[in-house]
Length: 206
Image (cartoon, rainbow, N blue to C red; front, side, top):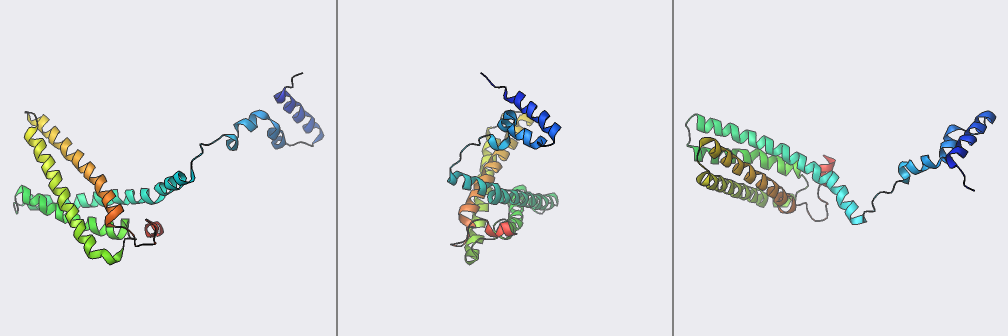
């Protein structure tokens, strides 16, 4: 003989209300539909401990660093654009020289914010090498972006609109790729913490 579980729960509730012995919460605890849909009863995927640890760190340290890195890039770009407008707009320098000067000007706040805000846990014993390597990376990035933009401009189709679109896409694609690569270089090599201190510890405290 089959038993209607939900009907049994309803009869139990009615009897309990008459006698004042069974609460609504207790009735819900006995209802199989409530138990089946309870969040704790739903199985979550079993993640290995190592993957859970990596995921937790990416949800804290790396995400925080990426956020600050994006803000730093915005500030450096604003400084570079302002410098370019001043140098080129006042005819102090030609276009190429003004672009180099603008890139160098933007690298100053970029280095300061990277060193002391994004990665404050970086080994302070390597400050001189860090500064030199940072400027080398900035110059390489400038050279690669200029090269990619020049190649795109030389091979872009005729017509002013399409020419500008191709050059702009080449610049954006190169800039985005270098932006991600530079983040990895800074995090994994240039601004490494000293031995024994985990990555992102001081930035988490700040």
